[in-house]
Length: 539
Image (cartoon, rainbow, N blue to C red; front, side, top):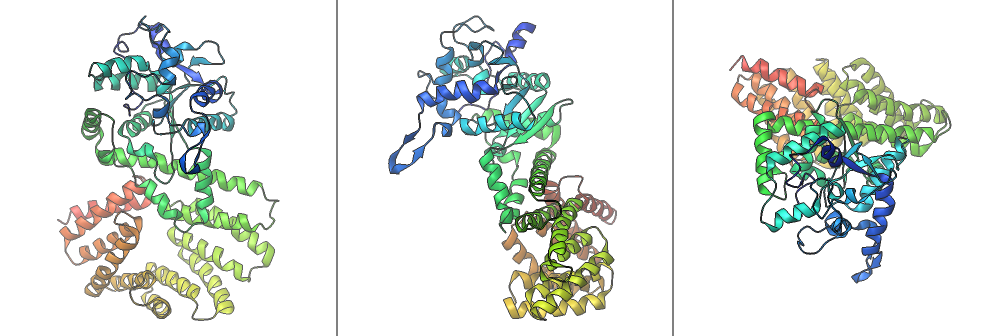
């Protein structure tokens, strides 16, 4: 595998304006999707391989199309330009882009594609054509700077054959000039559950640089099949965990490069100019915004397909699940919007007392709690409680969940007696249903601990917290926001006990998780940072 698409030839750094223009030429989306794809299909036709596995030409990866480890065997890209004189250095052997003529094929780049050579040509074409379609652009008039086709791979091979690589400083300089000149980086993510892009140091360095460059637009897209898989999985209970896994995946220190020297140089730049934490947070913030936009767009499309105000069960389910995701992301207003769509449809079709009203009422109550609107939250909880008791009885697990949430609201209002009363009812149901060591029992114990904390019974509180923490870490993982929330509570209790150093350690762990997942401007992140500043004055 070659270095990410920053490969350049030795002549790149000393160019005339005309040469610089040539270096910024891009290939039309139409050419890549048709002409280039035809060339790929000729060499890598659809075929049935061993074990009856059918391989499509579109599934061919870029490193298979042009294998730069084969120094003496041209792939499609080098073969195309082998007899063409390079217009930049005047030598035989040109970049693919410099073999093309005509406005339908080549022109000044308006997009720089940021990707990995592990991606398939079919997925790349899918992303580019969808980008044109979604933005009402003519694919014959959208020109893409894509490294495999726009870098002179003959010069890259010459360098390799001589045992050398292009110096990193030269690569960085040329890359920055391309970003600023083109002004739009299109970053490609696949697969969505574990994007290869986020594990390549050049890729995330490109994305970070583009995001920090004035006047440069950053667009993140993924192939249609990944988008469909993401949206189809909204109803899956594991979907949120997978999503948080993506949001917390970036760690520049663990990212890989084809050349270790590149990785070392990039890490040095990041560490000295930005810092690893800020770098990771910036990337994760970009990914988070992209995910939110993707989900919002999908929800709007679902609603557009339903007659105004009419009940549609699939639409109700989708908006309910999306509401959960937005709630977990801390996007309360978006969560309320999603839940209200479900609530209004259900109420119009079945009435305000129907058992189907339980879920949207309870869900909205949860969001209102997050917004600090406690009386409104309790009002919704009470409505849901009545529906559940009338439909399923006083020992139903749904009832325990409502009681649990009501207890938490009472705790926030410092109404401790009311909190203990409803939480003990919830705990009795959970123990009967699941036993002492179950997560649901642990959650109820945690809320009771929080109430005890408000009453100043710190020793009892810490006993319960220490029982709950390992259960949470085992269930969610040590970097999950649920663990962060628990660490925040533990830190607060330790502070109340006067154990300031222990409290600071817990706050710092909490802050690291929130910054990585939520970003630096989220309410929970800001609140935790403020707690740390207050605590510093006590140490």
